[in-house]
Length: 146
Image (cartoon, rainbow, N blue to C red):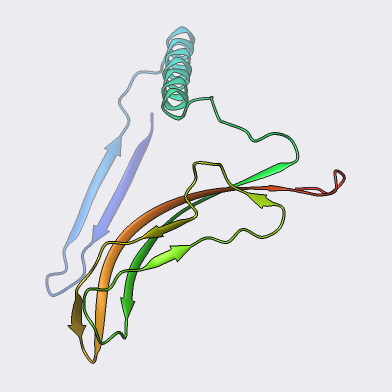
């Protein structure tokens, strides 16, 4: 049997002292009960692991060997320092050598038109324009690593 004598002292104007005793009055587990409990926990954790795996899944799309896939998810947040209203951003993606994109992948875009707000001494236009882009890199040399 385990018995703990404890004391807690509070801080502040009212300093209080609390004394108490903790006593373990549980009966000792039989080996069969302990084994059954451990098996139950193993089963529970195994089911939880399977559940988490089902949320993530196992079907990941892999690029072909020797090709690096690059996914970019971004946002054009704001522009500042312009003196006029009704701003928009026309953007273009230029791919360097050995990089390509899917045929249907747009390499340019235009944000919505946005009015500016005065924040201090600067005018700021808040776009909040999300975009996604996917590109692939293929090495010219077969021996070159990714």
